[in-house]
Length: 124
View 1 (cartoon, helix red, strand yellow):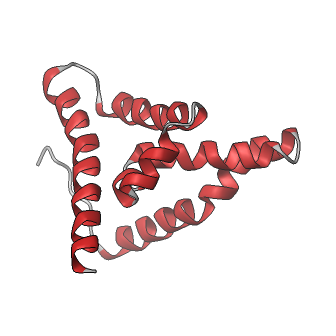
View 2 (cartoon, helix red, strand yellow; view 1 turned 180 degrees about the vertical axis):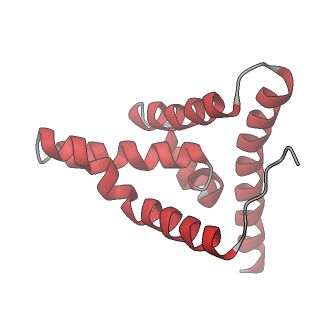
């Protein structure tokens, strides 16, 4: 049982670390801005889900594939695909429905931490 958990942790770490390493290499060795890298990874998650590859990555690496921003793209695409079975409106709203809890948590916790901590400019 311990060995199974250890193997799972290693898979999660390797895949999640590989995704983050790719992003860091793009930051270090290209002139692509962080925002463009974020969009690139989000759209890569959508694209890989659309062609059926990202599901295999999630089955293998679990949180190593779902926690990075590409996992959010995968979640949006998954919701849109499921919603499309209900029609055009379902396809348009399915991604937000699938990702609603994560979006809500990000907004609520972002707001709470903005109240608790005072933001400082990096220039100072």
